[in-house]
Length: 138
Length: 138
DNA sequence: CTTTTATAGGACTATTTTAGTCCTCTATTA
DNA sequence: TAATAGAGGACTAAAATAGTCCTATAAAAG
Image (tube, rainbow over all chains, first blue to last red; front, side, top):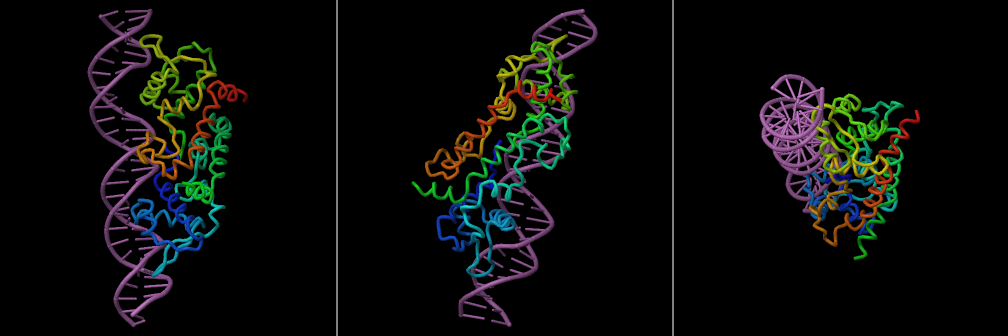
């Protein structure tokens, strides 16, 4: 099981690449696709989700592309994962209650809630900004 | 994304059920299937993996079934997840190096290793024994 | 005002993973 | 030796993930 799927992996690599230049630089998709190794059409879908989540902004037409919509230092890994993949859950009980419907007697729900919280906290501690700084220390 | 898939969910529910009786009680698969809501043939596969991992032992023939091979208090959730689903990884980089092949310059590998470690630690802290005790305090 | 460049967005397909079934075989014990 | 219970492999089904394609729209340059 992999927590971070390919789409989020592409997103993180693209965002860290962007964080290595001035924050208002506009990066065309072609550039991001080259840097991340993602197919450009696929990366576009990923970027659209980051846009919808308010992480990046996009511009069409000549000179268009992708730039940050907020400071990389306040963009958490959790935020990116959730924007691109959807909610992070330890199991079905924590995804819209569709499995256990919040039943009081649900074993998993009652016992693993703490792990769920700790996991999301972990993902909230890392930001795109910190990743970029650590990445640039060769 | 769900960290705990259905097979592991079944496994945990079955193990906690078993932990609520004497440790050497033999539970036929039919009983475990009824308690967990899993199809019996599917649950058998799950039990086989727990057996291979040394978590439970099985007996064939009349009066046969499944019992603990070690104390529920030393069976960690991580152990169950890994036995049933395979390795827990934050992303491809941490599954047999097949994506980044351990490259020094792999962004994800260098930066998210800490989260990987913290996550497995979380899953190691909970045991079947503690889950069972918390489940029985209605 | 039209050509060029670049993203938007939806429908579609392919691949992989997860879930579950089925059938034959072997072990156990009454 | 009949009945019961798991072993193990081949197979199918369903769902999630990954990726493609086509048409439309926006922006800027000429």
